[in-house]
Amino acid sequence: MSQKKRRTNQWLQNHRKDGFVKRASQAGYRSRAVFKLEEIDHRDHLIASGMKVIDLGAAPGGWSQYLAEKVGPGGKVVAIDLLDIQPINNVTLLQGDFTDPRIHAQVIDELGGPADLVLSDAAPNISGISEVDQANFIAILDAALDFSTHILRKGGNLLIKVFEFPDLQQFRRRCEREFKRVYTRKPSASRSKSREYYLIATGLLHTKHRIG
Ligand SMILES: C[S@@+](CC[C@H](N)C(=O)[O-])C[C@H]1O[C@@H](n2cnc3c(N)ncnc32)[C@H](O)[C@@H]1O
Image (cartoon, rainbow, N blue to C red; front, side, top):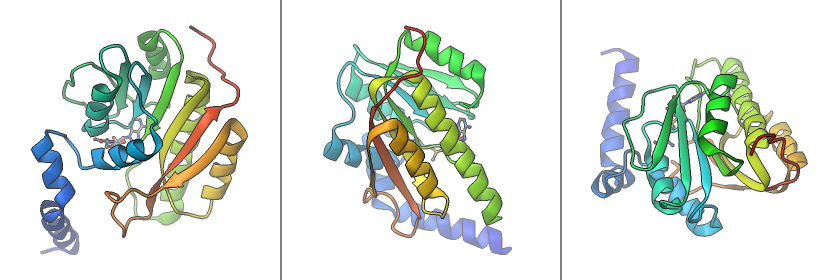
């Protein structure tokens, strides 16, 4: 068996044993990632009834399921991913690259006004070459920040997945220039071995949103 196949089998075994995976499937959620969002939301109260929310990098759709429940029929959830997402009640699905201006225009059409909250769990494919992976990830973070400042209302919030690496402090400083408060969370559903955590930026200072 190749080393890659052995690693994949090991990952599958661990994944099946994972309590969050079991809980997600019992509750009808499509991903264990939903518990990361739930934990952050219980603590920070980012999502409320009636909000307009955008979910970047949304497939398979666990976060969007949770968001649709929380914002309710008076709110709006737009979910974007490169991959196809199976339909979710009360969620508008857009397939494409969120950095593409055409997707941006579609989001503006769908929302009919600025958003209250942008979430990004997006992560690029890993090449294994750390310089390349870091550069790709920073490009995603910068694009998500730029997207947010153009789509959020003044005072709106951003929740974004980040990984611990050297250039991250520069990204954090860029967020601090745009938002009133920036802080981080490492939810317990995020595997402790993973360098992933979440950066939360609240209170957009100046919106660049031009329509609505
Ligand atoms: C970890 S998954 C998201 C899981 C999701 N939060 C859930 O609860 O089901 C990350 C997703 O980001 C997507 N992605 C990465 N770069 C993207 C981009 N530029 N535009 C849209 N989606 C992207 C990937 O296709 C992948 O499906």
